[in-house]
Amino acid sequence: MHNQNTIFVTPKLLAQQSNALASLTKLAQQCNVALAYPNDARDEARLLCKAHPFLSSCLQATEQALFESVADKTGTFLLDEGINLSFYCPLELATSSVITLFFHTLSDAIAYIQAFPKPGEQLPKLIDAYAALLAQGKLVAFPTETVYGLGADALNEEAVQSIFAAKQRPFFDPLIVHIAGLDQLEGLVVDLDPRAKLLMDRFWPGPLTLILKKHPSVPAIVTANSQTVAIRMPSNPLALNLIKASGKAIAAPSANRFGYTSPTTALHVKEQLGERIDAILDGGACTVGIESTVLSLCTEVPTILRPGKIGLKELEPLLGEVKVSKQVGPTDTNLESPGLLESHYAPATPLYLVDDVTLYKDQSDVGVLLFEKQRVPFKGPVVYVSEKEDAEEAASRLYWAIRHLDSMNLRCMVGSLLPEEGIGVAINNRLRKASAKH
Ligand code: TXA
Ligand code: MG
Image 1 (cartoon, rainbow, N blue to C red):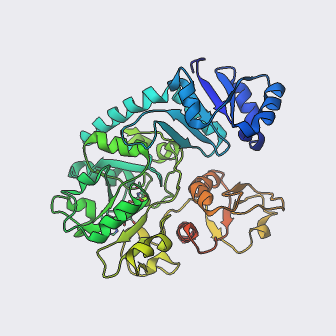
Image 2: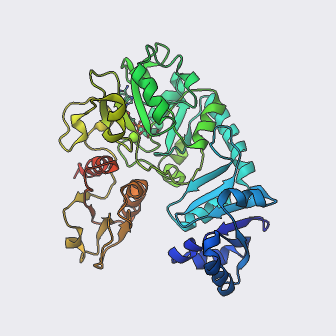
């Protein structure tokens, strides 16, 4: 890393992350670490700077003002207490010239800074290079707001075949086609339903996949021979720019081996598919953390085939009645959407859903997924999926937590379902599927 890098951190990061001081002191040997604080934290900031000499300078700034005020924008980062890492990186389809990436741990964020000391210069170049690979029919994994996808040119049959081969995915499971602009719908869908337009207007780019009538030019392998096609416009700015630069519509399932937990970091992708694919675009951890809502507009009544962040509460005001596929619940029956196979998203370590995880507190070989603050100590490893009992935060950490426990050679892991409301419905759906095999 160049020593002209400056990492601004927030006072709250130092206060809330127990390991922050040690990690940042170490980082300060390679670059400048400075405190960025709003006016009302002035006193706290002054004390922190006095107590920790590695905090070489202080600055009072909002995120935008901070990046405007620095001379070397591309070597500057802002790291906050939610482990969000912001940096200047003007991209065409982004809402701001400052990109913010999310990380599960402080050390992941620091590793990203070390890998990309000049992200504003490095990322646009990588995006162009990987877009060229996609245009050549190669496989590129990329971050979306939901999970990492394994992308290939959707209209190139051979390229799409190699997705199935890399994932060991059966051909009966159709793929979602990702687009970066509405102009790409032409040649993918026919007879666009007016309700689809409403939904696109409201929720795209974002975590909603629409099942629409397929255009004849979409290869049968993409849709598993169905006359419908799944389309989604992701909101992650790296994904949007990659798709746009490739000039193609991109077929992309989650970038995991078939049947396993979906990846929410580039490392997850590398572990399962690294050898089998051409590139992985690293964009930190996925912010939503569970797969998009799949909504069919090809059924009599619009039907949720896979629950996600966008649920009935968001959809019904626009659509009126919306059905939820029976498979979404615990008793899966007929197969409307093959991704709803009962055993899916499954870790290798058995996951049991229990009412009270504290019953396992004395078992040192049982890992525990915690969705709320627990006061009792556990002998086995625990992972806080959300310390704040926040369902959206739980979604963003769920797969990471499952993988973390799954890597520890435990006898089993246990967790409890969340209240069946909002994104809790989608989390419970994934928890049941991750546990169904055992
Ligand atoms: O969030 C997501 O949707 C992620 C990211 C990468 O965009 N992608 C994803 O893809 O989860 P995948 O392949 O793992 O899941 C796609 C789901 C499957 O359940 C599949 O059966 C369903 O969408 N699907 C795709 N095309 C369909 C179609 N024509 N009719 C019904 N279901 C379809
Ligand atoms: Mg999948």
